[in-house]
Each structure stands twice: as structure tokens, then as C-alpha cells.
Image (cartoon, helix red, strand yellow):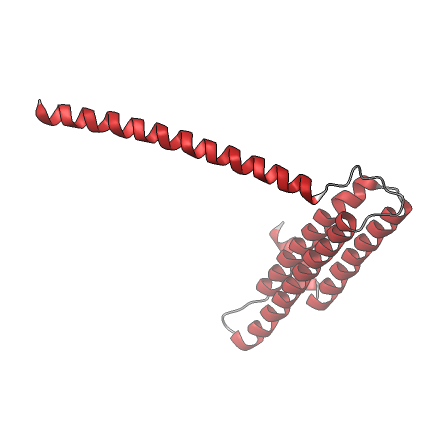
Length: 166
């Protein structure tokens, strides 16, 4: 089985693998945008950023494997060039997968579609009020924790004093 994998990876050229992954990622990106604007395939549109990232990671491992399969300590000069070609594939696919994922996520999250009713708009005053309530709750919790710690410290000090006197 390992010989079969070895022969498959040796037959792949780093440039062809890079192009293949880039075309596949661009196709997923374009399909997700088309689905979003056509208002179909909402589940695909939601999952597409994760798929793009996963394809980038898969391209990374494929590039590293291609570079390592031909690495030889006997011929370091040629091996370094092959290894760097594989690493180039690895980094290009990672950057493109993550970059397309970020762009797609930004487009789907922050740019509303015309006619979308995403619910009521949150006002800054509502956010400020919520933050103030959160701050009050945090301060109260810290004060309770401080009082509890002081009580425990006093009890511990008394126990230590009794133990030393006895």
C-alpha cells in the first residue's frame, strides 16, 4: 500500500497540484457566492468557508508529502529544490484556502442581501446598557468573591494560630 501511495505522490508535480487545489478552491468560492445571490443552498454557503480552509490544509499536507517523498540525503542539492517546490505548494494552498475563507465569511456575514430581514437593528444605546449591566454584575461578583476569600483567610489564620498555640 505504501508503494502505491509513493508512486502516486511521485507522479504528481507540485505546480499541477497547486493549480488543481487553486481551481478547486476558486470553484467552491464561486459556487458559494452564486448560491448566496441565488438564495439557494444556504447550508452549502454556511459550510463553504470551512471547506475552503480544509482544502487549504489538505493542499499543505499534499505539498509537504510531495516534497518529502523525493528528499534524499545523498543528493542534497537536488533534494532541497524538490522539497522547496513541495513547500511552495503547501504554503500557497494554505494562504489561498484561508484567504478565500475569510473573504467569503466576510461577504456572507457583513454584507446584507437586499430584502433580507435579519431582525431588529441593535442600537448603540442598547449595547451600552447591556455592557453597563454586565459591568455591575461583574463588580458584584468580584465583591462577593473578595468577601468569601477574606472569610476563608480569617478562618485559616485562626486555625493556624490555634495549631501553633497548642
